Length: 456
Ligand code: ARG
Image (cartoon, rainbow, N blue to C red):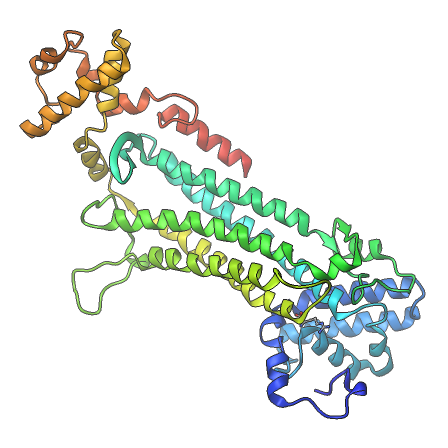
């Protein structure tokens, strides 16, 4: 493809430099947004009398044809083109001749790419929000079935206090809700239309920027032409949101991996969402969860790529910024892939309630409740804590549990103990007494599910 800027040059570009310089391999995915941007720009040029209305109409029709041809496969993208913007403009000019050449009036590729990327990422963000909402639905549905499934809550990966599986799932739902609100805020900040910034210093033509924003569905226009073409904070912010979202998915996946192990056996993955080993016939591996955990590193890497790429750039556009796309696209693709794969994996897994319950029965996770029992009978918490510690030590020595320890042993340490201690340290009581807002009691978790579903 002949270069549009050939006029100033005496020689053709070296083929390797052309390849090196080209971004079409990765920016072609923005073809639709580039075409819509150009259609709006051409319409505005016609309306403002900057180009004749008839020419504007030809351009719009030509761009619509190109879009159709690209979608149907009748038009193939030329891999030797410099980028998607040049490719579409050159194709239009090939089709229309003179009229095609008028499209780029009062526009630069710098504000064009600044528009396309915002426009494309705005749509991707909508999709990311939808996928996160679907995942929340899956978690809430599963939680609703397990508000009475007692399991151990851990700190330091040591059995700590009783919760329910529903409560554990709803903790992630809170994280996902914040992920959504971050994505929404990012999308709002991204919602500014930069066309009219020109190469960097605006334009002398009497263009109507608000009109273009309106045609493209942007809430506003960028306020400074240098900024409009210079910053990629919107891409960085989105990648940052996705790095945080992936970190949440990764923590959950780490738990899935643990829970699938014979040591835990809290869940069993559906055969369709697990893999086998090439050598060990007994194996059923949680590869999907491991890959999501692994891919999180990749998205964090994308964020670092973008921040590092931008941090030393003087205003305004610099070609370094072409490197923004692969990183932010990779972050978007990876997050979408992980969200869509995780949802059905969680939906289809079997929850082994009995195993959760048995594990909960073993770790003295009702010890705090035992101490609280004494406190309710008038003892200071630190003394109650001491006595309960002694009881736990005694149980370990006798290889028994607090539930099974005889009343005489309790009363030997404090005469405040009576028969009702067994009721107080029953795991179901322990969970359901934690009725505090945000707690694991059935009523509190049901409230969490209700509020979460209302929010989405
Ligand atoms: N492909 C370029 C990019 O992605 C488009 C902008 C090019 N502008 C320029 N003056 N070279 O950043």
